[in-house]
Amino acid sequence: MQMYSHSVRLEKEKCIGCTDCIKRCPTEAIRVRGSKAQIIEERCIDCGNCIRICRNGAKKAVTDDWRMLGRFKHRVALPAPSFYAQFPKAKSIEHILNALYAIGFTDVLEVGAAGEVIAEKTYAWLEEATHFPVISSSCPAIVRLIQRRFPSLIHQVLPIISPMELAARYVRECYKKQGASREEVGIFFLSPCPAKATEIRRPKGIKESEVDGVIGMQDIYKKVLPYLNSEGVDKIIRQTSLEGLKWARRTGGLNEVRLKSHLSVDGMDNVIGILEKVEDGTLTEVHYIEALACTGGCLGGALTVENPFVSRCYLQKWMEQDKKEKRVQNTELLEDIAKMPVRYEKSIVPRPVFSLDHDTQKAIEKMQAIEELYTQLPQIDCGSCGAPTCRCFAEDVVRHNAQIEECIFMFRKKVKELSENMHELTQTTLPTADEN
Ligand code: SF4
Ligand code: SF4
Image 1: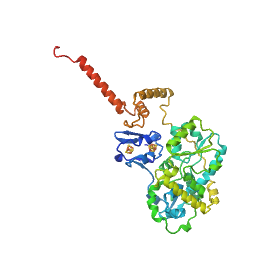
Image 2: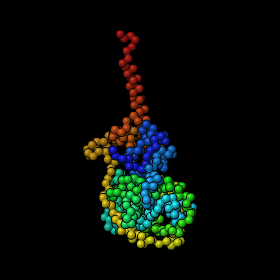
Image 3: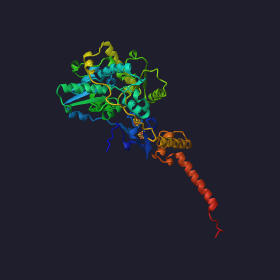
């Protein structure tokens, strides 16, 4: 039996079948059937949109349990740069890192440091790339979106692992050198979004992730709060510079000055609009696209605590502080991290969930059937059938995943036709009293 590897789940008892979520799913992965939402697994990219939309809390992110830490002798936290923007009241980033030790971690590596290395590797790749624009691969929801909805663009995805994965690789290697066994070292990413949790279970471009667990920022937030201003900060050595913090921004972690022609896009609808242009071949002048699924970049992730616009302001505060302190890059550490391999070990493959059939002839026939049915539908995308659009509903019917009568308009039409037929029948064939 195949395991459910997604990080977004439905809590059925909380779902009232309101259909709010179906229209906001970028891959048309949600249907409401029998008054309950259903996620079509192969279509879901774990973007977390439906978690934000549902007012009833029926969609939940599945991350790892905090108690998992207890299984390891060495417990290493990998805080994403967006983590710092959740704690504006801390005196410094060192205080936030110190709080991580206070709550049970034995070691911390700031993911921003790995981000600084990935930025350098990306500049290098852009020099040798042959297909432009190159599309960033740090947001796993975007890579999954490309696999499903824009498979023709797969060869343009940057074939470099994420800062999270690089940080974990480096930590694993360090402990290995110290003689610690794999079982003794638990590496935990403190994540702003559910897509990262799926990423460690089903990594793309690599065989296995070195991350053992993903803990949502929301789950750790309250644990950290009481320790934000406690003693011990003098022992903390920061690993990131301003450059590393930039990975939490809406525009991503690269330095615009070093890029020839760069485009940043955030928010799923905007990303889809840009990828459609890339697919049409109208963006060939652009060298690099930084695409992030959440509005506001990682600061807008479904597992963050702060509003993304507010946390952007808090991030700015930490960046200003780093500027004031003239924090420079930790060159020795970055050089060490840069020795780790970062290129994809295997190609990412298309998962064209929108294709109608493997057989081209059958696919054409199904497309014609969908078009034909679509013309009979009201085309107002009301969602009362449980599908996000009328076209999507037509596709569900042709795929035998829905009945035509589930459309309220088609149902009414059918009832009307039936009653007219009945009426006609009574007029023409009922025997009269005189008849023998
Ligand atoms: S938004 Fe979706 S999951 Fe939430 S109650 Fe409505 S139908 Fe159910
Ligand atoms: S997580 Fe995203 S892709 Fe998956 S069902 Fe929710 S909205 Fe759709």
